[in-house]
Every structure is written in structure tokens, then in C-alpha cells.
Length: 228
Image 1: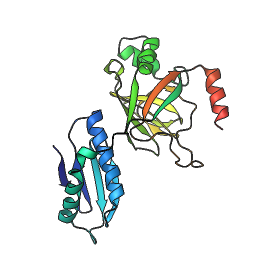
Image 2: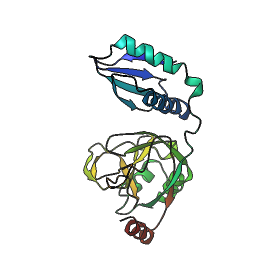
Image 3: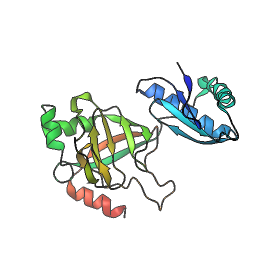
């Protein structure tokens, strides 16, 4: 059941549920797209997440009740939420283990698997970008097997290289830029996920399907040099 809840004095939270799944996430991003198209005067920004959209507004122009009324009208169009979501897909080449994935061995031991089995499981799935955040272009990917779920580091690293592929609990994701991070790093991609010279600057966006492909170091260098 969808809820519209005050979220401080300048925001509204539109909740589509409490679960993380494809159906709810598709509703989130469809509603966000519909909201952007509507261009309600006084709405400053909308922030989609796993199962909700935070709508930030200017209280000098809108109040909660009038904005909630507008949002309810949009929600009634839910049956028309777009159907082309999840149509885009991309393969992400990854070197697993070694200096590229210093936590691969730990992830394997924690789950009573071999490193090769972890890689096989990680590359066997097609993931969906549920949301983007934390750092510019950081994609939270849904659909990872629980067989390789691993707790985050108790003490996050001060610096994680750009392109690092990590596991945090039951989620997997890619660090687009060098940044602090607490996820277990199992590999690294040579692709640039954030590039200010491109438009849009981020490679991954919500709704895209992602498939990881295991490569060796020579292929990593070749792809990296070609993308410079």
C-alpha cells in the first residue's frame, strides 16, 4: 500500500512498500519519472530509493497538503507506469581476486566456498540497478545470491580504488570513484563508471540490467587503455 508521509518541513516521503524487489523498485522509478514530467511548481528535487521517493519542496510555494494532493493524482496513474524499464543491459568485465579483489578469499571462507565458486556464483546472475547514491554513480545492484552474502568490514577502508566490485551483506555494487568503503572487495572493473567528460557522466542508471564477466589482467589492461 502506498503512503505519503511528511518528511521534515521541506520533504515528503512516498512509500511503495517495505520490501526490496523488482516490482516495487520499478514503481518507484516509474513514479519518479512521472513526477519529473509533471514539473509541479515548488518541487525542488526528487530522490528515488529502493522502495520510496523523497520529494523535496519549497514551503514558500507549496504546503504538505497541496503537494500530497498532487502526488495522489499522479499515483492514480500507476497502472500506466512505464513498461520499458529494465530494457537496457550492460556487461561489466571484472578481474577477480588478488590485488584487484583482496576480500575474495574471505568471502569464500565465510560462505564455505572456494574463490572460484564465489566468482561463478557472482557472474551467474543478471543484476538490476535499484538505485544510485553514496557517491556519484554508485549503483546498488539487486539480485545477488544469498550463497555469497557477507558482512561488511567492521572498520571501513579509508580508500577503495575506482572500479572496485564489492559485496555488502546481501548486496553487490561497484565503486565508481576512489572513496572510503566498507564493502568486501572481490574484484575490479577497468570500465569508468563516472566520467565528467561525458554526458551523462555516469555509466549505470536505475533500471539497467548488469552482468559481470570474469576477465584476466591482460584483458583488464586492454580495456582500460582503450577507455582512456
